[in-house]
Image 1 (cartoon, rainbow, N blue to C red):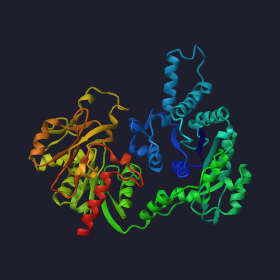
Image 2 (tube, rainbow, N blue to C red):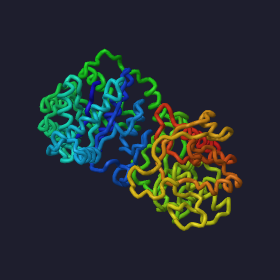
Image 3 (cartoon, rainbow, N blue to C red):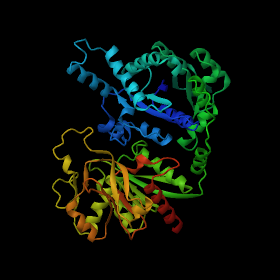
Image 4 (cartoon, rainbow, N blue to C red):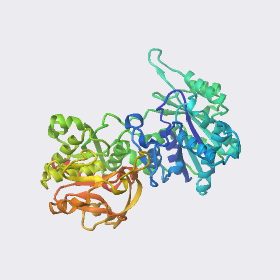
Length: 538
């Protein structure tokens, strides 16, 4: 196996994850098998208990691992299906080391950062190598910024690992900021020089430097960076701000032939140039679509771009599939509570209520679902959004006034949504929900079955504690609500729909975690198709 390590310098949020994912895309299109992973230096065991304000969305993998949102980029940009082995945090490392010490596995030795902590980090890479013998290239992004105290142990582990596997099998890529100083009218290379100098102090010489820049990278600056950072001039690569969509990033990095630089460095130069026609076609449909729809997303973290990242990307995928631009209108759920759904949402072609926790904005989301149902506007509820649709239907169609979820009102008279049986008595918050992929049964003749091409079984990823209360299923169904899918193991409700509505579907799972650029998730594809029909009718 060959190894690529992607580090970042100067500032955070440079786009290391997108750079790493884009490299994965290009290498896969050269016919290589890739696998990606993320090392995060924070002390949380995983981001599952973090607020979206701190971390953005929590991305859930097939095996139930709650991970960094960059793993969403990895799965969308490449064909790999990742697992908990592909996301390592300092919290996991220290937890493993302390447990080994308590079990006496260090045979009475003094436990130290070096070698014991760094060995634990290296052991993850060795294990991933053993578990994936057919993978050609393992790409690892190291979170944080070079020079930060919390990341030093990861950098040291990489230095040691490169010596162990042979430097000819390792490519270090460093992503830095190339700022443009408007007052001076100049691009400044000094931050890049100092960032690389810090990395070299820690024992790592980057092979390739990726410069994040608003402008292009002229040859004088490329030459200067190469000289002061001890790399070849052709290995200084520009990573420009893309104009329309993040899916342009692989095409931008391809301009400086980063895939060729990588394969040459790793001795894989026999691979053909990347066949990017399908990717380019997708990008063109995103940039130059024939149609347009407006979809309101009503949530409680709506001001945060990354809180619903996978949902926004899934709408882009589905839009491109239908040659349609999806104009997303971000609606604060609490504003609906204050001013009403019609006033805040207005005339749109679709309404989506995403997942979430806590009761803030809940009544606003319920009004959004009611507005969509009563006005025949396509509605898509995801996780909490499915529960919201159920509560609204129970209240306003079944006559169960003040029906609610026990998450929001423990003493509600009509708990149409309740805590899962196995969640009762659970005290720890981290990694204790219903998590990961599980099998569900689809019922023939339903809209959902039609969207899934009449499959009888599906596998979808979950992240929730509450469910539709089985005591109310019959009453809801008698009033016209259709249950179109249940879990294979326990019969939990997975999908609800209204057959007389143009598109009114709620899914208890998170379909956004399985959508890809040229393979949109069928529920998102169906939702956008319904929104397009609604737009054309308007």
